[in-house]
Image 1 (tube, helix red, strand yellow):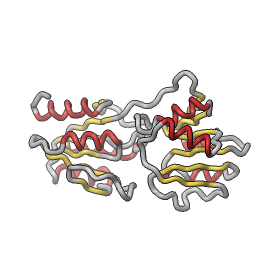
Image 2: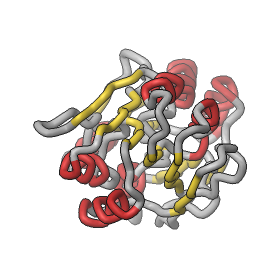
Image 3: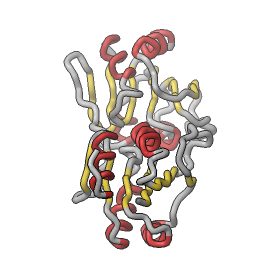
Image 4: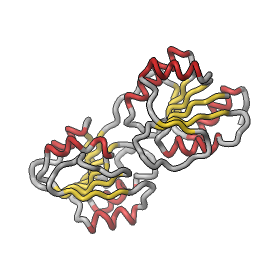
Length: 250
C-alpha cells in the first residue's frame, strides 16, 4: 500500500518509524523543508512543496498513492487545505493526524488570542521580558513592539526576522523538561511567555514551568483546518486506520 505521509511533527516521525520495514506498506514522508537539518527517519523522504493543489493532485496520481496521512503542524493551515482539496480531486483517502490542543489547568494564567498581531497587542506598552516560542516564521509581527526584551527560541537561526534592539536567540529542539524551562525562565527573568497552542508533550513543559512560576502565558489559537476530513489524535489510531485500509487487522 503506497502511503504519502505529510510530516513535520513528532507524531509524523513516530508513525514513520512504525511503518518502516513493514512489507504491507510503502510509505513516503514529505517535509516542507523549513528545517535545514531534520532528524533522519527510516523511510524514503522528499523535501519541498508540490506546486499547490493541482501539483499535489498530479503527484498523488503519478505516484499511485493509495492513502494520505496529514500529520503536518497544527498551524500548517494552508497545507492542510491543499491536501484536502487534492485528495478529493485524485479520489485518495485522507486521514488527519492532529494532536489535541492544550487546555488551561488550575493555576494557569492564560490569555487566549486569535493571531500573532493580537499577541503583540496583548503584550502592552510597558516594556516586558518576553519568552517568545512561536517559530521563526512568526517573529516579524513582534517588531512592531520594540520596547520589549525578547528571548527567542527556535530550531533554525532567526537571522533578521526580529529587528529589535533587545533580542537574545536560542537554538534548541524539543523535547524539553519542566525543570530546565523553569531554570531558563528564572535566569532570564522572564515576565511573560508567548506560544502557539501547538499541543503535544514535547513542548508542554514551558506551560507547566510558567504555571509553577506564576507567569502569564499568551496563547495563540490554532487556525481552522478543513472540515469533513477523518481525524485521529494518536499514532496508534492512525496506524489502525491504515491497516483497515489495507484490509488487515492489528
